[in-house]
Length: 253
Image (tube, rainbow, N blue to C red; front, side, top):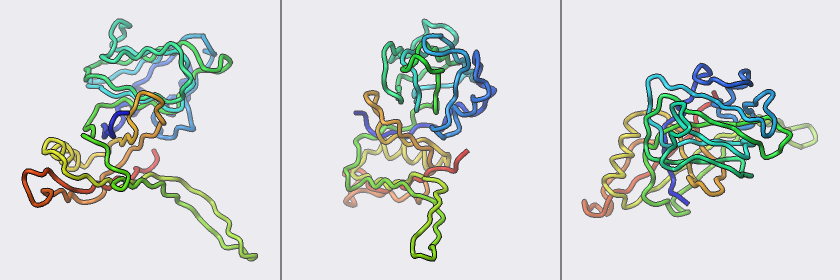
């Protein structure tokens, strides 16, 4: 298991970046941040291979790729339309039964990214992907916080009605993630990286379980919503820094 990570918001954010053999009507589902709505090919069932081409203008730096709620049994990724251009951690999957994957690799500047989809877990299905996040790392935690210093919450927005018989009728609108992360005795370099993120005011992705093995598929686009409160631990410049981070999920796209 790798440590928690903050990564940039999704670089894939418009349908004009994507060229596919089919399924053009569902391209927007690749980046709508709703994993239950998925891109689907048309006419490429099972082992009928198809390639998705994603173009970046200008060329951009990548080091993280997340594929959520997919049905791909065999697939690979390369860049700049050359199958020999593999990343430092080669993304070539020959036999798979997992439905979410998290890939990390050394930073690579690319003009385009190719996703070659060669087979599906169920041979009778079209290729499908719930969410494709293409990004670059902001900061990997030095160590994960202890359980008492990490407080995640799924907050439900709901409408409730008290019925005449005393029962309650409830309509769920949406669920949103939030968390408070307490960090203690962190190094100057880690603190400075966090300060850069805070000062940017930009949305970013939080990956609580950044692992390539049996990844749970949880990734949240969030805002940093509390004030910067990091100070010297124990009032000593030699003990590192203590502080809190509150992150809250962004609105649906």
